[in-house]
Length: 134
Image (tube, rainbow, N blue to C red):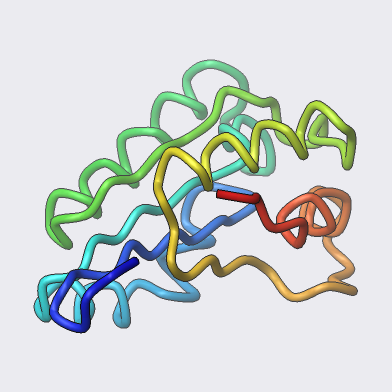
């Protein structure tokens, strides 16, 4: 059981690199300033969706950008190597999300709201809503 003075472990899931930053970046910096632990997880590697770049070069760029943001915010930022558009709401993804939640010993887990119209996002949100048992 956590004591009132113990830091919180905050875990934020996004479908793509930069989703966590855009939705929770400022709050993450405030929580870090208060001594709490923050971890962002991008469920896909961001290798599609750019007008002139794609594949490996784009995935490498979309990995480097969150790592730079993480260094500024003093947080951990994981980018999973799942191709954009290939993330599925499956038992395997559910197990992966639960494994990450357990590893992070998350006290607070945030993700996209249900009902989103973005295909990659909408497919996996239900996996994030299944809480792990400790």
